[in-house]
Image (cartoon, rainbow, N blue to C red):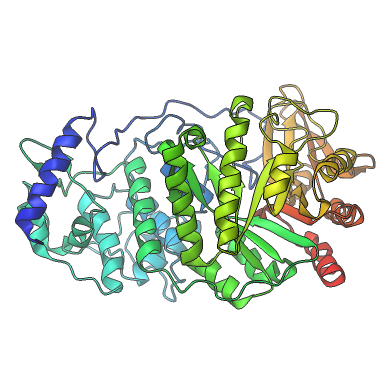
Length: 561
């Protein structure tokens, strides 16, 4: 019985559950409690300028209830890590931030008209295209006085209305009766009527208040709450308004030339310009979170690109910020069913599992999970890949690789990608990141314990610059490494044994040392992989590269496929 009264009863149950947790839920379903992060980001005078690439991460979301949502949006290219590394999950989200996040998440088309608010000057130049896209699409509007108020916190009513307007564009109709669910429903403004679509479809929940739930339309929303709602909303769109699945599979590749891909602005631009030089693309938009719950969403523009470029196989990458599912049969079964459902819905060619940090004791559980996943995917005609730490014959059983049984995995997967990078890493001493002599040893061991055609060499399209005194390293795109060297007048030289580029410079009384795989190194690793008779190469990742990498990919694609 679809009546406001029945929905009121439903929300009574939600309210009782909500009151059981310690904190207010602020638009979220029962079971989530907010917790502010406390970590701070390191910094030092004279350090290199803010990194433009590498695996940047937020330093204040560990242990936060919304950490999984925040990470999902970071992986999907919606969020950016600022120089201080802080996300500030407990702070109110501003109208500017929410406009930018929604614009990126929804992949809104570029606006044709400039912003004309009285306070447009207060919107940073770099963020204006995203804000303009949200405004021109009709999702966000200004105030009667002509202002946008970019730094003002976005209220709960405003936030819900923005997303509701998007569902209106999909043909859904708001219904005022759903405001009756809340004690303060009469205070929800008339202009916020689109928010009732989200209430009806249980995308938005109220705050606990006695004796019922309240909507609190004028209250602020935290940054953590906003990320959770965006992820839930995007998952809803993927499930209800996805495009037809990719119908034509890419032809089998004789030699894989691929890249992992995050749907950032730079990543998508590179895909459009250089994607034709790849025959495999692994889209990173999904993460396994606490309780084995799969979070994430598809990228419609990436799916459209793949549908137009049949020679490039589009895979789905699944990462894991929580490993509880490995030892919980119920969680792993539900997780695999969710993954299979997404593959069917979108038509991905396969799934790449990037499950890192598995304890040695859970190695058998990891192998069993991958074996079950392989059986399900193969039954559908799809393929499976795993990204694993690199091993050589002389370093087996180390803490970082003991859980990953190459011979057993090689029996069930179609592709095993060895992450042959971070030989020297950000928290260690300066040195080559993927030395060629190590790559040779990694390839030799993997090829000796499985079919060589299944072995794929992972390559880093990034580098590190270390403070030589403190060993604190910062990651940069490959092009960013070159930019830093030029900025500080450093001469880039090549280390012949490692087949990597390196440089050093002085700044603020400190010495900085950089190492990275340049275009020549990338070409040499592609050639090494082909000469060794393995399956190919996979670079991390598409939005980290520089233009001088692409001739090597294009030449190899034309010559060996």
